[in-house]
Image (cartoon, rainbow, N blue to C red):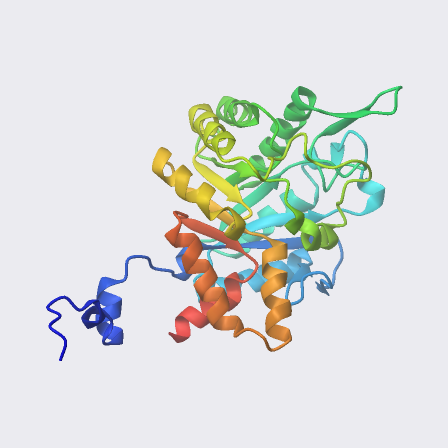
Length: 331
């Protein structure tokens, strides 16, 4: 026998003991489900995101009731807008009778206790496919207009809040939009509506399946003048300081698994809750590997989600939310 008075394995010898000392937990209440909604009457499977659906308003209401039973109580709404409603000024984003306001109203009316979050950005409504308004110059260059875009984003956020949204989530990465949205909401006595800021949204290669689901890819150029450079972390901490000072209630890092170091650094700096977005490309990589038989889907997903929590995320947006909740219930 080895003379080992200290044996760490004693704390791993049974499931009960492992549960007693577990440092990081994962439960359905930590999960937010990003959902896609469209104007039609049927529910459509999404080819770029197998297992996900483009819901009708009625279909989403019924799905939300099922999700509530699984413990998934927060949905984040993303609209698939038909091309004929997309314009350079993205005016449909502020339509009080538009798809998102109608969906919010239906969910809040028919699914008691649900929390509704909405995406605030112009790319689903903008015929140019960018998160802000675009100006094309005579020399052939283009610019995403910051201040003009923020004005529209404020009207969009107000439209969603008026319809009953609990949380508005600006994902555009325009400078100053958190302060402007907060001021707009407060001026309309909507001071109880929360803001989840996309604080560190990186110009990632992992958004392709999402853009396929909404058909919202940029028509020209890329998003690198407003989304963050993947090589930067100090910049993310600066954005966190700004969003906290401007009145954000929750900060977000996106994507999640490739940016765990950013999340951990942000956790040390701020006291606000932190969200992480496990994005479409991260979802699809696991789905594809599992479909090929190379990974155990359940164990890979739960390990991935606990790693995001361990890095400092208080909540996780993931397309795996319903399946993860079912697996957690089985445990």
